[in-house]
Length: 224
Image 1: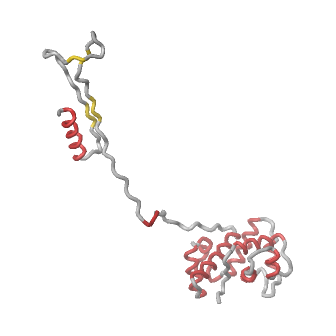
Image 2: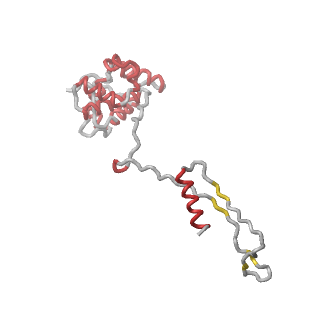
Image 3: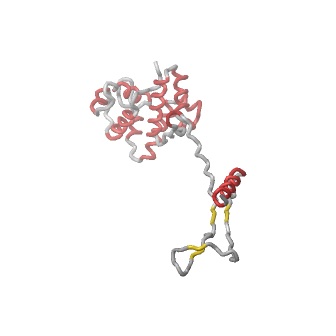
């Protein structure tokens, strides 16, 4: 049997301790838990957790030092005292990891509880979750587990196809407008000097294939 407490919903333990902070009766039993509507059919797991950290004894009677902790009004002082209860209750864990236990990721906590209590993966995860709930009450935030980027369908995302920049080609019109007849165009006279300027802006990041494609396009379209 596991020596460390566990439950499928550790939030029930957190809520129960919240109720006890407001009113800590002389005796706390499964009926007390049921009265608050917590952990339906799992009230005994909440009681076991409260007993483990020394809030109540095996008969459910309130412990005086625990009453002193839970009735501390100043939140920082309460967290400090509650942390003392947790360190005492999980003494072997803190002997192994020291104060690092307050920030251990869940995976390491599961490994510790499984080795310590010879429990299954499911029970070990629940034991780790209960400890995380306790340390959260003591003022230590639970660290989020790192997650890798999700890939839909288990496939790696395809690399975006490289775009080949188009060359900018500017050419002066070859036809010359006849000012006497708007809209009509006349071919240049044999003795008329005509200059055609072509400007090509080559991309700096282009490859040899890019340049070859540009000049091939010029040859095809400008010199049929």
